[in-house]
Length: 297
Length: 297
Image 1 (cartoon, chains in turn purple, yellow):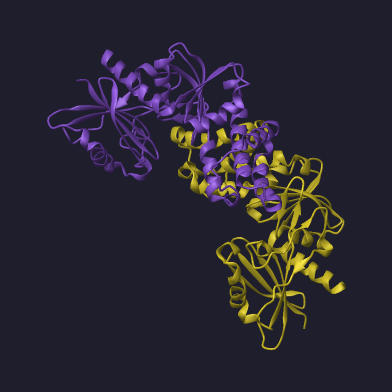
Image 2 (cartoon, one colour):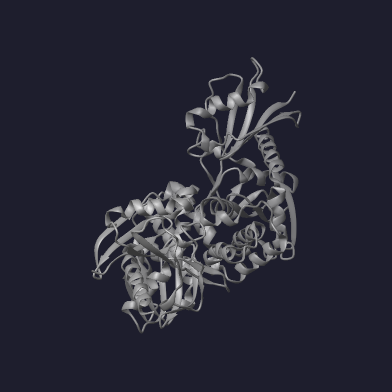
């Protein structure tokens, strides 16, 4: 039986899949992100998390990607550089003091000029190419650090990262605006209007942010309106900055449904085509394709 | 003897001055900002802080401005609205259960369209006019929430607030960039280059922010360079957004020396004239001028 483990270990989450004969037969998902772990804790933590999948005297192969390959992770997997062929990414294999498993951690991708880095997203892109072999265009991976990539033929040609999600979070949680943003809901019209405001005048971003608080003090329109504005401003400046990546382009979004819907609202009438793909599914496809390539070579 | 107390009570600090015959004879400065206090705690806290200035059976007058007049402060002092004459700002007088003092808290200033608010800065501006009666131009008050004002004849005509200082703080302390920004020093050339980068392409702000981290991972140029870039990016987008306030204008900066020097570096060759004034001194002048106006009326 063809049995192996796929792992996506990010800054703030852990996901592992037991794959048997090409199907996911079990899944483990926890909040044990790499940022909560010291380097020497990874091995024990990992073995504890996937204990139930280990069988005495049988070695199972584990393929992993994400922030566990960062300098502060389990073991540093040096970056590949753009232009980067996703068919033969490098990996590192930490020695593991347990003969029931072997581990490969795949490299992230860096770019020298302008400087940029990714870890984990390259696996999603490889997964995307697994199912969309002839795609040539741009891929957007919204998130804590949203990424825009130019891709073709399983190559990442160049990319650009935006601090959109992380700014959204720290502004919502750590600034005076927190009093005005206590809502999970986004109102579509207010969101579109706000993105458009920044599209017209990106130089007003940090003023527009303070206006959220001032407007609340003066007009008290409620947190849904203000959260929609914050989303609109931050996605607006990202999309304006990433215009070269989507204007007259075929675009693929890889992310979670809620966030991709926001991007779709802004992009659908501005791009050649727009398709959406689940980030979790693409990671899994990506690790499968890495494994296929290993077995070929 | 003409004896009274001037108070500047902000979000994160408390400053009080004992004034005798127009001179500051004593000063109390602590970190007891309004954000650390519940509404009902202000009176006791205040009396404790200035205890040594109180004399039995003598009522001393206290004039105060700043965030203690906010809704969550000691007592709300409703905003005056623009255009706003600083010669006759309103005030509220909380009842105090101690016959040794009387308190007046002066109003902040709000603007309906576009929405904006200030509390404390209007006092600095009144202080500025106390010494610069015929000034007509723009005033910039850099800080947590940097403000740009159009002023003339002791009037605030309009103003615009930028979240510059607060973004600087949360990005330095609460995002992944914290690993790259551990420096208090700013390198002037890097700062100017970075401000200019955002002047040219403000739409790249949130990408430029992530680039700080990526550049550090790839090139490790040290925290002075990266802190200078962060300063340059955030001041750059503020100044570009505030262009109407400084282009071909006489400009007065009111703030602390270190921050005003950064603004001066960027503005000195772009404005008609530029003068710098100490924020602390202007608050004191402002409260003195409020008192003079009260005695006239």
